[in-house]
Image 1 (cartoon, rainbow, N blue to C red):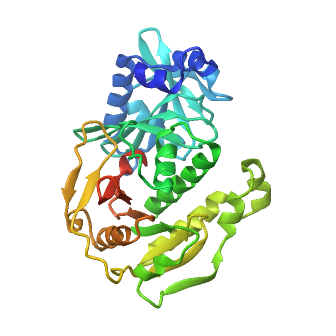
Image 2: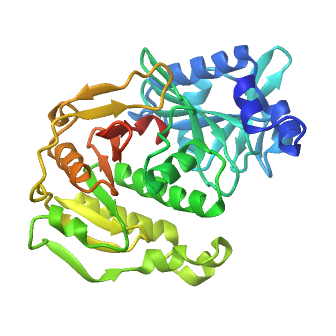
Image 3: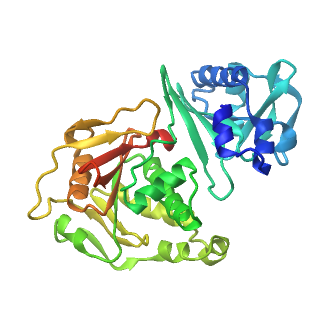
Length: 368
C-alpha cells in the first residue's frame, strides 16, 4: 500500500503530504475488507447491500454528514446503513478511534488518493483509490471475488507497438502520465466501456481510423444501420476545451452522449466509430476481409499481477462477438475492438506487430 501511494504521489510534492496522512495501515485494510465482505452476504429487506467505504477523516471530506455517535465498523452496521448510501458518489466515512475503526458518517467529496473499499455484489469487493478530479473515476487496485484475489499490475498494460487508442485507454485506466489530449481520448474510451458494460446486454464496438473507409471491407454489405452523415455530436463536444463542454452541451452532455453511443451496442451487430468519435454505423455484421485468412489464435492477457499470456483459439474466449472482433482486428490491424459480455467480462482486441497476433486484453478488473 505504501509503495502504491509513493508511486502516485512523488516524495516532496504537495500531493505526497496529503496522501501520506491517508495511507491505511495493513490492519485497517484487513478490517475494512473483512467487514465489507461479510456485509455483502447479508440481506436487508430482501436486497443485497451495495456500498462504498472510504478511509478518510471528516475534516478532509468536504461538507460531510456526521453521526453524533460513530458506529463500530461491523457487518451489521454496514448492512443497516447500505440503503442510505447505495447511490453513486456517496461513501461511508471510516477513521481511527484509538485502536479501532469507526463509521463516523457519510461524504460525497473525497480527497485525492483516498482509499476506498466498494461492495459491488455479494462476495465481490473492489479496492480503489480516488483519482484527481480530471478523471472523474476511481482507480482499481485489487478485486476480491469470493476466494480469488486479483491485484492490478500497473506495469503490464500494453506494448510499445500498440495502437494509439489502446495506449490512450490504458493511460486513462491506470492513471499513467500522458498529455491532456491522450488522457482525454482515453477517458472517453473508458466511459464507453463502462457504459457498454452497464446495460448488461453484451455488445461490440470498433474504433477505426478517421481517414479511410477500409473498414467497410470487413462489414457485410449492405450495413444494417449505416449513418449518413456520421453522427458527430459527441465528436463536436470533445473538440471543445473541457471547461466549455457543459455550457455547449446543454442537455446533450458528454456523459449522456456516451451512454447513447454505448446503447447502440445493445443492438445485434457491431457499432463502428472513427478516431474522432463520430458514429458511422451500428448493427453491422463482421465478415472476413477478402483475401485474408481466418484468425486461428489470440493471445489473451490481463493487467493483473502474476498473469501469464496464453494463446487460445478465438472460440475459447467467448461467443460470436469475440470471434468476430478478433477477425476484424486480424483484418483491420489499425483498429481497436471493445467487446462486453452479458456476464460482465470485458475484452479489448488489438493487433500486436511485435507478437504478429491479435491480443485480447481482459480488462474487467479495471472497470468495476
